[in-house]
Length: 366
Image (tube, rainbow, N blue to C red; front, top):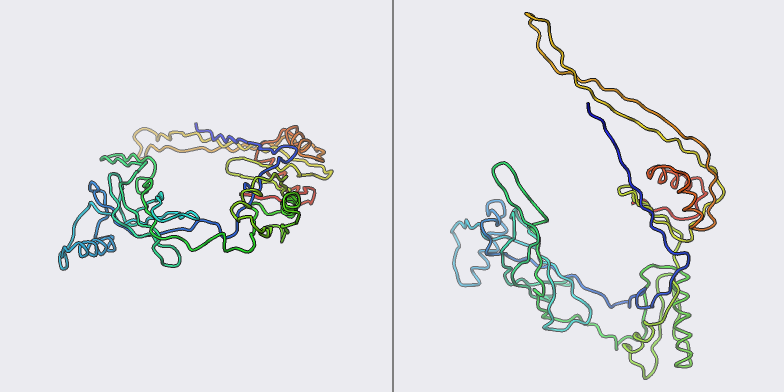
């Protein structure tokens, strides 16, 4: 007899009743000051028979021949059969204001049918940005966290053995042409766009500038950006350091985020529910399978067979109405907990309240 049992779990994550203040530099970024993504194609050597099969990965053989040609080794017309080489894609992030000679961490990912990069060494690889310029060169010993072991009857794999990292594996060879001193105005972009937060940032900066410089320098452009004018005899770096430490009370729209896979519900502090009646019946479905052996009579030409009998029982309970009204987050959570329904039922209730127009918040389902 086999019985199917389903178990659900629910996690509520709630925010505080009042928003805490945050520093301006923690909730904004300076427009133009950002990372740049670098990408390159390289070869890994020194693998223990776990490299690309050159028949299935012709680009690996072409790269090997090009590399050997640069090293004055002529292999044209010969068929290479090495299993210790793998083609990879190398990626890295170039931070802002980085100078020549600085070191970057790089990520290496297999491009062919290599089974593991364990023990390999990356040869000199040019890392280019979207403009085609080489900004860094990567090379070094790989650090692989995953492994794969295969026997005749079983394969054991942990992590991803075809991806690796090289700490400080790239050297910056070119700088991004960007200078703060050339800016006439500074634009601060909000990580979480909101009109109230944008207005409060501009207000906090102006209060500071009027106290220190006797003038207003900030102006909120929209929900995402605030423009700041430069101050005479004050460097851009010094001005950003000063306004970055100002405290601002942040705000955000009322939202409910639902993750139906993990049963997690995140509810913002401003979520409210209008007076409404909710009913939800608890439906339980149980599927039971029983195997039976069918034995034919003696001296007959029949065959012994195993048959299965399936029984399906459905039970529904509950169905009572629940009055719900949430003027604040605490009342809403108390009402949901007192309803006593299952996690998937709570998610269904929240979605139904939104459809009925009783839930005054944005519902995001992941």
